[in-house]
Length: 74
Image 1 (cartoon, rainbow, N blue to C red):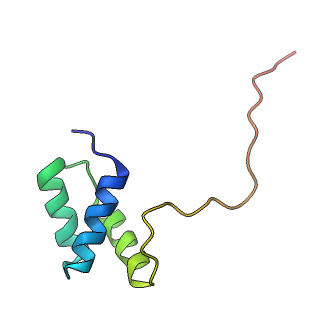
Image 2 (cartoon, helix red, strand yellow):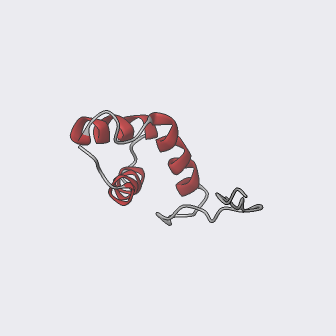
């Protein structure tokens, strides 16, 4: 079952606020939505973000130089 990133992140935030660990949260999400819903590493990264006070469910804006792709070949 494909599950949206927003749903997973919302559930991670809910579990964080409820006092669960990132590991327990990722297990519960995978049990409900399938093994590929979220891995434990990603859950730990989101919990770290929440602990720092950032409760936003959006990805950080990418920084750095953008690469342009050009398919034109003379």
